[in-house]
Length: 169
Image 1 (cartoon, rainbow, N blue to C red):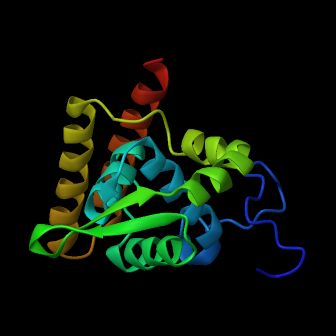
Image 2 (image 1 turned 180 degrees about the horizontal axis):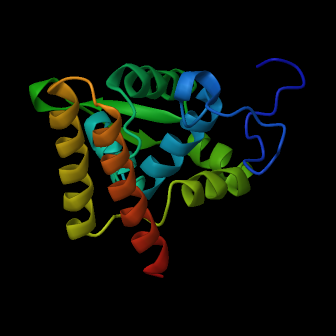
């Protein structure tokens, strides 16, 4: 870690860069801690962690296997987690005593990451609707470029939906 680098920067810091690390939601140190906190809840496979993070973010963030599996390997190398081989080549990730001690020492940062990730499972109807919207947008954008009228109509529909969601508190 670079000297003077805060691995858990304040998300409300106005000096914090937007879209840091090319759009990654977490820096590498934060992702390590988030994964450790999640496997402390219960042992999980890498794919389960990917899906759990996707659910916590309501589908708006899905870490790639190319990020998750090397991070799990690092946690294993450091002794914070143990990767146990199972049938069909899958490996279950469990927290170790060293990992639990590290998590206790960094509990405030871990809790902040879990809170940033949201309360947990998004209700199924909401997740379904979000997926429908993403699918509809992808289909429309594959048909070709949007003219100004179509772009304005889509933006207006999205703005109306955003206002409705904000008012649903």
